[in-house]
Length: 543
Image (cartoon, rainbow, N blue to C red):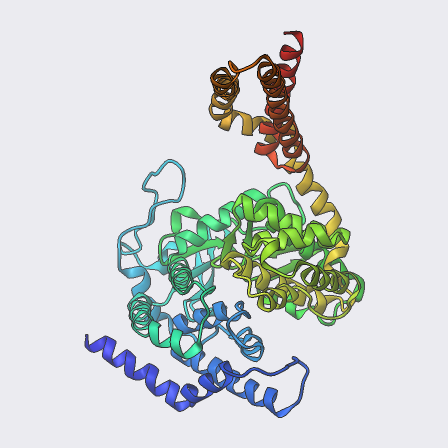
C-alpha cells in the first residue's frame, strides 16, 4: 500500500511539473481545422503541450512510455499534434552499471530450452558467474532501454548479443497498471471517449504489451517464428536464438553486424533505393502473406549489410487473424488496382459498418481521394489517411488495424528517408499476386475440405430431407384445400411445381454467388449447393 501511494505521488508530481492536467483537458477538447505543417498559434500551442506529455511519459518510465507509444497509433482519440509527438517517444535511458544488472540473472530458477521436447536444457546462472559462461563478455552495454540492456559476447566461438532485463521492473509495472485501472473512470470522463472506443480492450492490450515486453521467452518464440517464415529468403536475415542460454529475463541470440538503416544517409541513391524496396517487400510479405509482422520497424530496428537486411528487436510483434488478413488484402488490392468499390467494401468490413450506416456515395469519394493520394502523391507518408477516414465516419477500427497502420507508417518513413521518391505501391504487385495465389491454391481448398468435411457432409446429407419437408408441407396444405373443386386442384398442382422450381432456382443462384464472390470455405459450400440443385432439377424433370 505504501509503494502504491508513493507511486501515486510520483505520477502526480510529474503531471504538476509539466502542467499536464490543464493542457490535456484544453487540447483534447479543442476542435479546429489543423495541419501538421501549420504554424498558427493554436497548433504551436498544441505541439508544446504534446511535447510536455512526451517528456512526462519518458520521465515516468517504461509503463508510460509503452502507453504513449500505443496512444500514438490511435488518432481516433488523440489529437494529431499528440500523435506526432508521442511517435517520438524514445525508449532509451541512461544505462545501469553491470553490477546493478546482476540481480536479473542471479535470481530465479534455471531456464528451460524453448524446444518441442520440453527438456530442461537451461543453464543455471545461479550456479556460476555469468562472465564464466561466455568465452568473452563485454560488461559495457551496446544498447540501453527502459526494459533492458544489450551486451556483446562470444559463445562457443560465435559472436552473440545478450539481452538482460532491468531488475525490479515487474513491481513498478504492476503498480502502474493498478493505478491506471483506479483512475480509468476519470480518464474516460476527461478525455470524453465515445461509445465506439473500447476502453477495456485498450487496457487489456496495454497489459498484454507489458507482459510480452517483460518476458524474453515470448520474444525468443517470435524470433524463431520469423526465422521460419524467412528461411527461404536469402535477402532477409533473422538472428538465431540460443534457447539453451535464454530464459524469462535473459535472451541470447546471434549478433547481427551491419549498419542501421537510419545511418545510411551518405550512401549512394541506388543502394538506398535497393534497400527501400527490399524492406518494403519483406514487410508486405509479413503482413499480407504471413499475418505475423514486426510491430516496431523503425530505422534502428533494421540492419543492412552487403545488400541484405535484418530485422532485430522482436519484443513488439502483432498478428492478423484470417478474416482481418483477408479484408486487409482486399483493401490493399482495391487501392493498388484503383478499384474504389472493392477498397470501400473492405474498409467498411474492417470497421464493422454496413453500407446503409454511412453516406456511401460520400464515403467512396473519400476513398477515391485516398487511392489517388496513394498512387500519385509524393514525398510524404500516406498510410495515416485511413485513420482520417475512420475518424470522419466514426468507425471503430480494431486495435490490430491501428497497430498495423502505425507500423506501415514507420516503414514508409524509413523508405522515404532512403528514397524520397519511394511509393509503397511500386513494390506491391509481387506480394499481392502471391497472396492471391496462396488464397485460392488447390492445396488450401483441399485443407478446408478436410477440416470442414464433416460439416459439409452433414449439410449435404440433410439437404434433400430439407427440400422434402418443404414439399410435404406444401402438399399437406394443398390436400386440405384442394378438395373443393377440380379447378383448385389444377391450380395448386401448378403452385406445387412452381414452388419447387423456384426453391431450386434460389438455391442455384445463392450457390453461384458463393462460388463467384466467396472465399475458400464458402466457395466449396457454394459448389456443393449448385451441384445438388442441378441434380434435383434433373430428377424432377424425369418425373
